[in-house]
Image 1 (cartoon, rainbow, N blue to C red):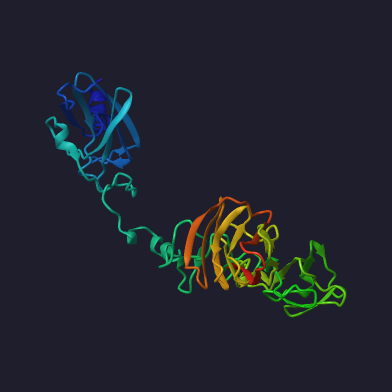
Image 2 (cartoon, helix red, strand yellow):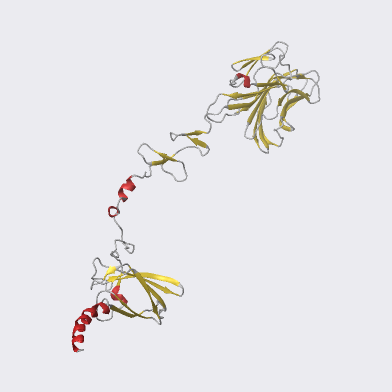
Length: 425
């Protein structure tokens, strides 16, 4: 029996260190909250696998330590002597929430340590090649392949703008395509109106020429392109190109037997050459009406002439000028004359018997509610006078400007020598 015991003792002595486990350091402390009350909750302590100072293998794991009334007590394997050094990640849980996380580095110690003895502000790694716990910056050169990957990516160019279509410039940087938001982007990075240059349109063009029953030549404001796009109306009736008239460039030549007569109205619409922009409805001043007028002899206000503007010609923003000249024959008495803008009197004056000549000028600036109108008039003896006012006449469906007069003495006559109504672009 004694012989058996002597044989077992060396084996028991050799096994004792293995059964005792790795050395441990005690961490004992009282944890308070900022308001002075004691902390109650759980500490979750996690670590990666490592080799203890006594070469014991420590597996990756975690433990949960209950803290009651602020008292903490836990024993952990020292990590400051491992190579590389290992760190514990400690998460504080209280009231059902994760309150904060910190890192511990535990040294070997034969006496209990407090938390302040093991807490570190900036860990350098967990010793497993994983710097998840590191809080300092990592140099780009330390990340395998990062610099090469970054070099392969385009960078922002000098004309880069958020919210725009990207364009790779000649240096390989990202710029933004410039242009109108309604434009289309080409494969070379340029932008232009979608579909390429668009044709323009001329609507409501009034051919220029005297309508007296003998003049057959009238001029359009632009050249129709193509020529067959011209739609020419006489008194609202579409004329047949090649039969009722011929077109050469922008000149309309009416056929014999189809020459416009006094009182007729002409209206034209056609396409313009593609310009890549928006065509202006009237690119140059348009003579809406011009000519000579009638003669009045009576004492009742009568018409000397009229300008009938077709529907669709006038629009808000347009400006119309009215000019006229009157000739008075006789010295028996004076006369009264007026110009009407629709139902609104643009101007009205009474001249003396000695006023052999009178001239006048009126303006109308159109807006959505009507127009602001003004006038100037003067004569041989009639002093210069100016007026300004407003007109509420609608013009979308057309408008008529009339010249009227009445005589104050028997035997005298008053004639409208000439007039012109001009639409400014």
